Image (tube, rainbow, N blue to C red; front, side, top):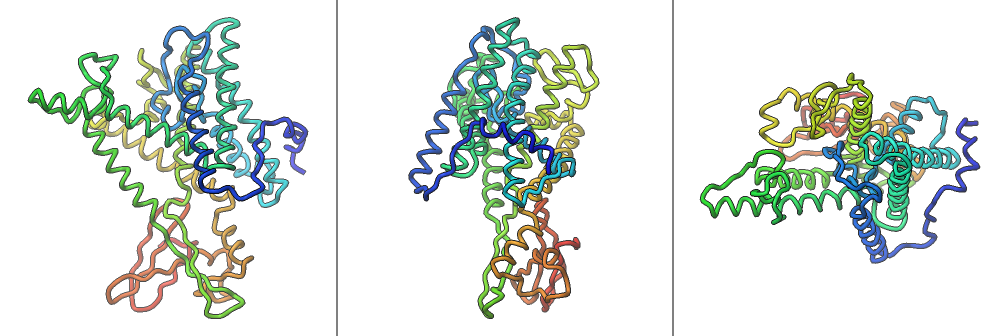
Length: 430
């Protein structure tokens, strides 16, 4: 019996979206997703009551990925939901919490506890942010905290609606919507910048203006977007679209009928964008904690300047470079940031696929239950779990080649080719 079962009586009082008992048509899924996204954008424009002056956004560098908007009802964004997911994954993955996620009861306890923790974090993070950023004082502090907490709970409910009645994940939808809005705004806005009134916000209008004046500017000073950022945004988008379409197919045969074969496709980016979301959420929590400690005179996590940018300590290394100029000025810091992001994404990817029953053992068990088996595996030579992800691919030309995809990390291992089949075991890197 898990210790978390003591919270079972509280699960019935949690807000929950019912699972559809019928097939949801394509148009209805589109409608639900569009309606929820419209509500999300509307809520992200409602200012917090009681916060008169514009407060500094200490999490501006992570705000797009967190799908929040500072000073509004959705200030928290998806932060509490993702943080609750990180905590539960770490506790279950390290066996601190003994939960069997292969059973219906184990999944119910895990999801219920995670939802309880997310609601608690909505209030905790709202109070910490309101207090740390001096949004309000006295009784008004409580009112601002409640507003932000309600916004976080609404995001949690909307995410559940999209997951059950719409397309994919609500969190991914909110991030995609937020990123798209930011890209369009910073690329094509004709409004003047608040910090530099003589400069336009949009990179394209600013470039056209500079081109007409006879001095075309590809890059711009400060945080104003330039055409170089527009170019790299398009390049990265095309690369991600291509990589996302890559599939590795495992040949399978039906055990009961000889000669009948199929293929099991595996995405190259197996864990999707979940690891990056979890990594950014961790960085934002560290930065928020560092800022709160700074207000108490504790600076061991780092310090900030008057604009909220980290200037020393750990928080200075979890802050991405915002331009090519910043990258050229501090290449070592950018390298450390890149290494930390890659390592954390690998860690969260491995943890995610194991806890969501997407790992080799779980997939091997599922394919075995429906009567499928790898046609290149000899029974008795290896365990079905270890051998299930052997991947055999053929190359062009005279030779045969075999490749292995480490689905957890997205690494490609290459091996020498010959005229015979090479079987590469997933458990042993080449």
